[in-house]
Image 1 (spheres, rainbow, N blue to C red):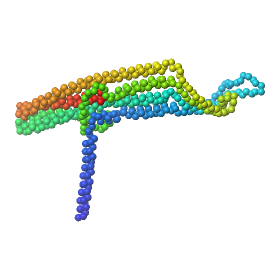
Image 2 (cartoon, rainbow, N blue to C red):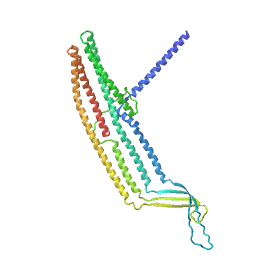
Image 3 (cartoon, rainbow, N blue to C red):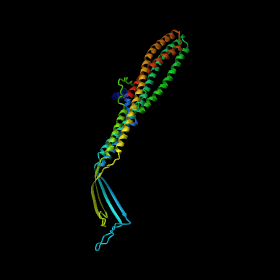
Image 4 (cartoon, rainbow, N blue to C red):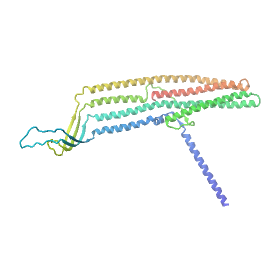
Length: 436
């Protein structure tokens, strides 16, 4: 008896553990899909800006600039060189006079010398500082160019995102139409059963359902392709179960461009040219350095002493290019002309974005007008479809008439939904163009 009780308790315990395990797995599954399967357009923008391969260039440019800056700073560190020399001369210096009682030694034809040469830059006319400023600004220009390139990715993300939205909307409308046909087919089949409706009427509706299934199959394939493109752009793992939320509408009340990365790039490029113009003047400033040489060899500084001996020299060195032949002014003029070129490029960019904005605003106004007609058409088509449906039930209309009017009503509603999304897409395009 006790064995049976123990066995029952053990089975009950295992059953509780199994239920708890399945409940835990179900909870995790529910938690994951309730929080991780909704995405917005802005989130896609942000993840694409981080994931797209171009984004990694920013960090690479930073590393390059840091290494180049370290190299520049070595200009103010002592420079030391080890030099060695062994030579044989066909002739040596001799004194072409004879002095009685004085033995003037001759130089050896073989000579040897090992030296250590050191120099220390004291003043460079702020050349290194200016070069470092240009280096850092060049890095900013390169990083900003990355932002310009990444901004173009937004258009690809926008296109793929709205392709998914449009296809989802088309599928939703078609599924509603199919559901309506299913209900009507049940009524027609009921009439066939009692002999009041011909089989051909049911076949017409069934054929229309097959056509809808074909359209849904095409939509699913195209939607999966659009989702895969989004996955490539963003690095995410979206699926057909992911909910893609609608972005908020955008109204452009400000005619000025917003935070377009191209404008920042133009500004940095102009500042870079200004620094380079300053650098051309710094190159002409005097430069002061200390130097020294120590060595061991034969002969030393006394060329008549043929023994190996140490020697050294220390001193200061001044370099100043007094006659620049107006090259600095010419370089300044070149940089000024390049600045004007960048200004013209900026003006061209602004004109181009204004032209895009004009077309996009025209599209927005077009879709708003179309939506007014769509609303009227949906009301009329639904009314006509309802009338034909009643006539079909009364035997005064055929299934063909019913299917045609159902298609017209579905197409009208589909046009309404599509134009709503196209209006929203045009607003998002305008938002990107204006940099908001």
